[in-house]
Image (tube, rainbow, N blue to C red; front, side, top):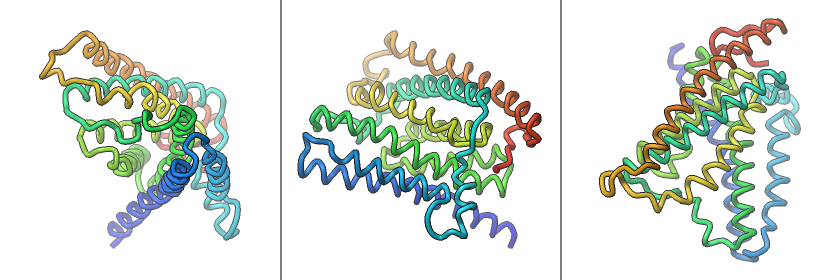
Length: 289
C-alpha cells in the first residue's frame, strides 16, 4: 500500500508539472492565433502574454487565494535566492551542456530522419511577429516549465526519492511534455537530457532561478540556430559524412565532457556553501526550503 501511494504521489507530481507548463503554452498559443488572425503585422499579443506570465509566476509563488496554500506554493515553486558562487558555476555548467546538446541534436538529425520542428518555420510570419514568437517562446517555456517540472514536480519527487532519482523522473515527465514536437527517439533523447541538465542545476542550486537563464539560452539557441535548419539537413547514409558532421560530433563529445566536469565542480561548491550555511547536501541531495 505504501508503494502504491508513492507511485500515485509521483504521478501527481508529473501531472502537476504538465498542468503548470500547459498553463503557459495553451494561453500563448491562443493569444498568438488570435493576433495572427486579426493583425499579423502588429505583435500586440506579447503584452497580455507578459502580464499573464507575471500573474501566473506570482500565484505559483504564493500570492492570491487560497491563502492557506501560500507557503506550500512558495516552497514548491523553488525560486530561492542563489549564492553568487553557485549561480556562476551553474550558468557555466548549463552553457556547456547546451553547447553539447546542440551538437548532439545536429549529429543525430543526420543519422536518423526526423520531421522538422513544427514551431520553427518563421517564414509564415511577418518579421516583427517572428521576433516576438522567438522572444516570447524563450520566456514562456523557461518560466512555466521550470516552475512546473523543476519546481513543483521535482520538489515533490525529492520528498519520495533521492535527488538523482527525482531528477530522472522529472526529466521523463519533461520529455513526455515535448512529444508534440515528434516521437523520433533522437528528439526524445535530447529532451530527456535537457531535462536532466535543468533538473541537476535546480537541485544543486536549490533554486529554479539558476536553471531559468540556462533554459532561456537553450531555447534561443535552438529557436535561432538549430531548428530552422533541420529541414535542410541530409542523412549521412545518403550523402556521406562531411566535415560539419564530424565537427558536431566532436562538439557534442568535448562540451559534454566539459559540462560533466563543471557539474562536479558545481556539486562541490554547493556542498561547501550549504555546509557553511548550515544546510545539508549529499551528492545531488539538496533539501528544499
